[in-house]
Image: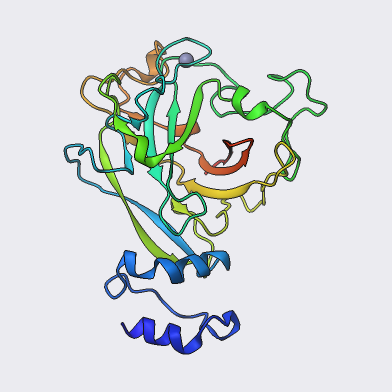
Length: 282
Ligand SMILES: [Zn+2]
């Protein structure tokens, strides 16, 4: 309550809001600050840290953001398959964007094939080697993304966006990654962070700003980032990563995009949500 008093005193004049203010999650309940948080988010002063629960627990149908377990997808949505090997892709995590986010009400679910191994396909790479019609060898930061490519580049990966309310736990998916619920924690974006987060600005770990240009003539917004080297622990029955490669037969975790830090951007064109992923090596 102390914080709210301060907020109302400073009003909406951003220049008067103390830069050194800290947000105490014990004082502020998430639902209470949504209106204020939306305004702050516009100013890039607030972001949402993604907290993955350490200990496992049974998956519940009402949880909308989580690592592993079974994905919660619209019933009519086919389980993603790999365009190289044809196997069902492994489900890594999904995040239901919270109320303070421009994509509130939508969920992003992230899949990657763990059944095959092929160079140049470990991340969704936009390059001439894979798309010969490109006029440059690779996509550089700030470049516009060639039209219609964001669907085509999801070869060993799939990024599904759908209304959160339509998701149901998919019993037809063979569970591979251990289930861990995700919670959110509001934080001020005073400094760049490389932790997993939603909103604010990308916390580039390589120092280079790789914000993309436009896609289908529209700018993209930064949606979220996922921390590099995060280990997606496997269930007892899950196959090892990379199919038959012998050196990975005893590996009991999957890595997303080789364990690189990944950044998700998105926009909407013709009523469709588009996702662009770029990665930086830890
Ligand atoms: Zn595959």
